[in-house]
Length: 318
Length: 251
Image 1: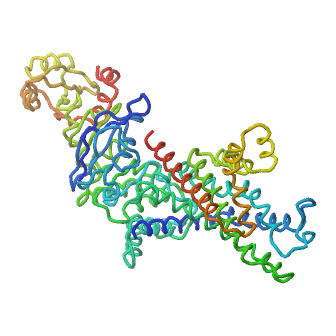
Image 2: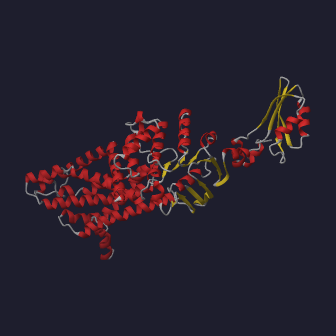
Image 3: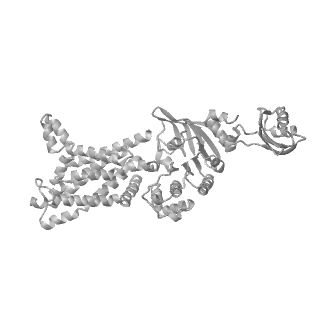
């Protein structure tokens, strides 16, 4: 549904987005991660046709956003950053306006407004002016606007920003459910959202894509991924780590904790481990009283840090 | 068809926005007060309504270029500045509409609003008709000219509103620009110019003024050149607005 090829944006002499390419198919929810100023919002603004790219192309549903903007925009719903809305209007008036400008006529319009109101739980504030709403409601009003025409493509810039934990949970659920039939891109810097809602995630830094994959794939890029944590009782840490170091699949051993007669260690896999590390360590530990033997999945925040802050990322590992 | 529907939708929203804020009411009240006061009370050399001794609205229309100088930029200043400040411009321009539909729709809303304010001066028309036998054709022509002139000011305010996020800045710049449009045809300025510039230059400058063109309307002369002047000023300004908005988006 969305194809982005070599998208680049210069602001003066600064390159905000630098040759980004990716695509999103129907049924995919793409999480867009990156530190502040990485170019997430700029990329989304180019996808939705708000700002023209310096070079590169965006196609939505087969329509080029620059050459056939109207057709492309018709397929898209967009929730801009900070969820702007016409504050002088009531929620109902605003959604009605959005529906009208999306070309919904006759009975279809009140039906679309009703559906969006129900999906975003806005009944209680329907006839309130938007400027009197709390941030969460205002945010959901703008969210409702973006889904009013049941678009095939949804682009959302930080859809959970400023919501309380319950609302965040609702919005993530909504995104995940809608993602089954639509192509969705949303940006966030909350990493747990990637697990909660995304089928795939892209990490961008300084205008470039530094990682692109499913949350599980990304996690495996973390240095801790595949490491094995072992806790044994009744043996000294020196003896355990000495024996573990002799296992050929182990690159490095770190002592995590030693208390109440138990010792916790983490063994990092060498390149020949191939997922056999846990078994090898289990064998090496034969005869000890094993309390815990667990393979680490890796952590997204570790991946995020090491990809977007290369220097400090390494330091935190040692 | 589709374009017209889009323009209508935007115009409707924008008009409603005027009446949702106190701006509309404050504007109308002040405009009507000024009109009444200046028409009946002010003017020793220009001639107040009664001293004039004629059943006409000359003393009413003569003030319009000056009222509009301050009032129209106040109406137009929020058009784009507010959209940019709040961020709704991002919403509006990612809807399936072209930017000229948005520009025209917003302009029309403000222009219709000014038409309403102008129409609310109707008691003056009744007054002269009760007191005497005015040429209502001339009065109608005056109203038409006044509305076109308001449109020209408004289109200039559109430009300045698109240039900035700050409404006050937009207001001040458009007042200055509109002042130029008035002064170019103001008698003292023309006299000053004709002292040293060649007659063709003087004429060219005077031709840029809203006053020279509005004069004809006041006299009841409906000249296509004057209509074209105001309309082309509007079209040019809206086009400039579009260029400025595109410039912002391109970064």
